[in-house]
Image (cartoon, rainbow, N blue to C red; front, side):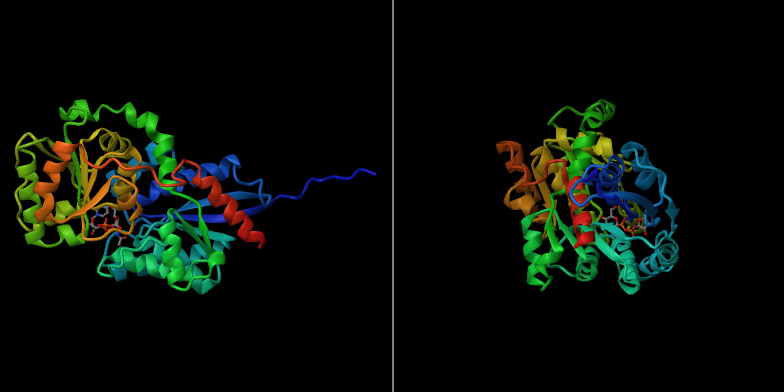
Length: 379
Ligand code: UD1
C-alpha cells in the first residue's frame, strides 16, 4: 500500500485593492510573493490575486509610473473613481467595487494603508460578509481631523485580519477592543518594495540632473490638507523653504493637491536656482533622493518610514504621527513650522538623528502576510 503525504492545495482567491500613490508599493511585493508561491507552505494554500485599481489617483505621474517601476501587472479591474469630495469619492468607489465582489466572489479582499479606497472597499466587504485583510493596520495619529485617521479606524473596526507593521499598532488595536486573535505583527511591507528596488534607485541620475550633491540638499514633500489647504500655512511654508534654500539646496516635487492650492491662493513659486520646485517624481527617484539627502522634510507617512530605513534624518511637519516608531526608534522628529529654522540648523550642525531600523522591517513582510492569510483561512 502506498501512503502519500501530499495534501491537496487549495487556491485562495484574493482581490487586492490599490487606488492612490502610496498603495502601489504596498501591493507590489504581495502580488509577487503570491505568484512565486512563497508563503504557501504553512497551511498549504496557493494564491490567485486579481488587482483592483480604484482610480483614486489617475495622473500618469501619480499612478502609471509606479506600475512601470514596480513591475506591477495591469489592473484586472479599473473602477475609475477619480477625484471628488471624501463622500463622493468614497461612495463612487463603493458603488463600483460592489459588483466586482458579486462577480468575483473572493475568499479575501486585501486592502492597504489608510486612503479613501481602503475604507470604501472594506465597507463593501463588511456588508457582503467577505473577509478583509488590512495591511498596515493599527496605526493611529489620534487626530480625527486627518481624513486618513477616520479611514484607519473604520477599516480596522471592520477587517477580519489586522496585519501590523509595528508593535504600537498592536497596542492601539487592543485598546480599541479588537480581539487579539485578529492581530498579527508581520512587519512593514513598504520596506519589501524598498529593498527590492534599491538597486534601480541607486542607478538613477536625478542628483546629476538637478545639479545636486550627495548629502548636500534637502528633499521636501508636502501635501497634507493641514499644511497646504490654508493660504496662511502654505504661504508660510513656501517662505520658510525659500529661506532654507539660501543655506542648502531644496528639492520639492509638488503633489497635485499642493500645486492646485498654490494656484488658488496665488502663491508665487518663481524662486531661486537653489529652490527646485519640480513635478511629482517616480518611486526610484524618490528613494534615491531619500537615501542621499542631508535630511528629508515631509508630511508623508511613507517618507517617514523610508527615511527611517535609510537612517536619513527626517523632519516631519506635523503635530503628530501615526508612525511613532519612526520617532522612538527611527530618524524622524516632529516639528512645527516656527521650529523649522532651529531644527534645520541642528541637523546641519550635528548631522541629525540617524536612529535604527525597527523590527521586521526586513524585506520579508509579504511572505509573512500570505502565511497569515493562509492560516486564517483554515482557522
Ligand atoms: C491621498 C490620500 C492621502 C495620501 C495621498 C498620497 C485620502 C483621504 N488621502 O491624498 O492619505 O497621502 O493620497 O498622494 O485618501 N489629483 C490630481 N491627480 C491625481 C490625483 C489627484 O490632480 O492623479 C488632485 C485632484 O485635484 C484632487 C487632489 O489632487 O482633488 C487630491 O487628491 P485626493 O486623492 O483627494 O487626495 P490626496 O491629497 O492625493
